[in-house]
Image (tube, rainbow, N blue to C red; front, side, top):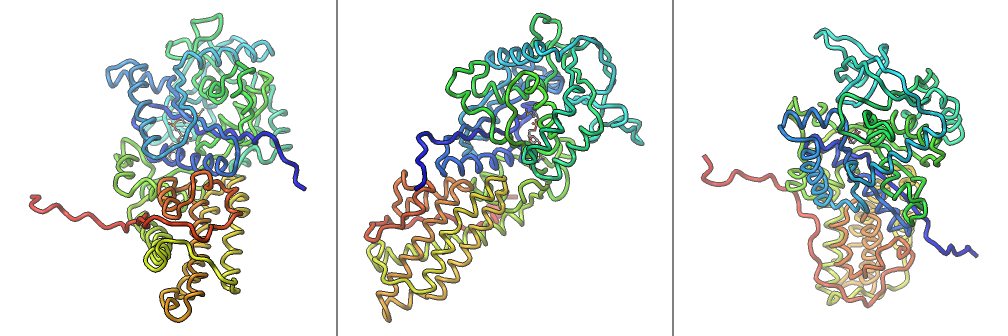
Length: 522
Ligand code: ME8
């Protein structure tokens, strides 16, 4: 017999914290949606989940943008942090905490990790002379930069760098080269996907230089303990958000039990900070390293990188209004293999919305449930003996949990959705093949069985599709009269009860129709 575990296992998942130097864009929305789907999956699978997101408010980029907009960095951060939080609400992001790095608690936490790194002998005062990219908030070695035809020197991500020369504290990153390589070796799952792991391993093998971790030419940031002339390099404080978020340094706090994080979900451009600097800081401070860092790809608008200067930044609020939140979520999660770059475009989202959602899942649910409504008074019919076809489709539905679990454990969200939609397609073939509309007269008992089996398969699909489309699946499960406590994956094992009275089915996925020009518009 399986041992009963007294406490639910904890699962700690985070997004990167965004720079609130502008409004949130579709890249931010993508990361929030994907992380939310992963968090919801584990929650529905019975885990005790903590989901952290927030804003990264310090650094030069914030100072410079604030100057341009004629406000203080604090004002800019407050204005835009609210927009990020609004976006999360609009997109149905189920975070447990929204952290802002300007919070007092975060300053305290960051000073504490600094003290521990210093106590371990890893911080020393010297002076820095080298290249810095404000846009990346990153230091680059000279050989990582190139001077372009426009005479501008740029770093490896293509952003301009400037020469910096000032007194600075350093972190002995060079002392962690072997320890980091041992970590990657012993825990190959620490970095995903593999392409990022290889990139990080070769970067670290190439040799690590000590890292400049403080600045003296501005004061917007976390002050260095006992030397307030210095503020910390923004990435020292940014990364520390992941432990502040669960109440470090109060290690007696109940939330601290969530550490180490199960996965930090980030974009591929910031893998070095998360897979090199962050574990080194933690090792130095004597804190466990996270279990995994997973980097997703970049989202492009018709193949072009979105940027404010190109003017092709896509506003997530507009997309949600135009297509619907769940349609947007489904599109991004299904269309883009999680870990690779992807493209956003209107035709693709309309195609997915109309084919996968309106036609395939929406029609299946609507046709079967309205037949139960009209011909059986909305009562889930009692099935007879199952045919081979019934058994086959039920077996495929029953296999989804194990398949999606395996995929979601390694953040293969698109694979999980693909497994579910394979069953959607099979269920449609089953329904069309059994033709329950014609069985009503010829074989009413058989019709009951077919409608029962279809309702059961729709129930399983709806339960498993909740992480991707929480709003629409709530409606679908309402149509099946599934109680809120029976929407967890644990309930997949118990079949829908014959005799259940269903409400009139509400259509869940309207087809996307191109808006027509309003009449009379000049
Ligand atoms: O990097 N497609 O903040 P950020 C997909 N503050 N993802 C994208 C994207 C795009 N077009 N553009 C950005 C920062 N992202 C730091 C993080 S974490 C301790 C500090 C992703 O606002 C990006 O990769 O520039 C990152 O994971 C997140 O959005 C925030 O980016």
